[in-house]
Length: 269
Image 1 (cartoon, rainbow, N blue to C red):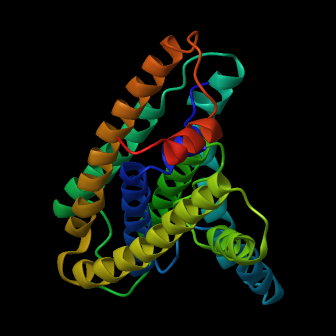
Image 2 (cartoon, one colour; image 1 turned 180 degrees about the vertical axis):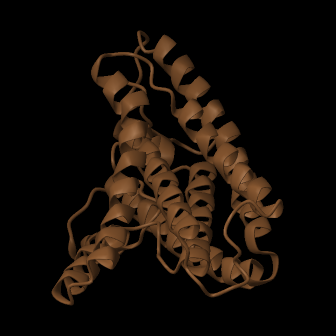
């Protein structure tokens, strides 16, 4: 209840949405590095970097590096309060309200940056203000990642590539060497295509961010801000569709695999 089934979130229109989210995360991650000297959309390498900083007794750097994944977790926590925790209590999650936070915060950063109220990005100096920006962007990435992981039962993650690459390789091996039903093989192809599209979009977002950020500074964030506003409207529509599906849940619905078999074995009209 209140989540998308695999047969739903692997439809073409949803794959486009996951790719858009990948682009958005890649853009924000590269902007974070440009503006703050820190990557913000993933926490995989932070443990190693913190260990190196501690080994060199650079206490301030180690604290800064630890705060980035902490803020990522805080963003995930905020999402959990309004989505997964509500689902546990059989209450309606607020996916749309959570995703409205992203465009509001991003547009606010654009506005404050344009008025000169944030750190000067034309210099190479990393200030305390730019570090706070890194923490804020990391929290937004954590919020986005957790929201769509919750919505898709943990199957779709859009802000980092490590787990996605692992799953892609594992499922690719299953496609070639496993023993799968026709339905499962079809689902595996679609989820791998979704991962590939997200991977490419993430990289493309990073490239565009590098090109735009060096010329327009904070105004560059208007691109993911506009995209995140579009994501908000998409999530609002998804939420309404889930509500309608819940209202019809009392009617008998065939199993997904049965529907697939019937569709593929039906006589030509």
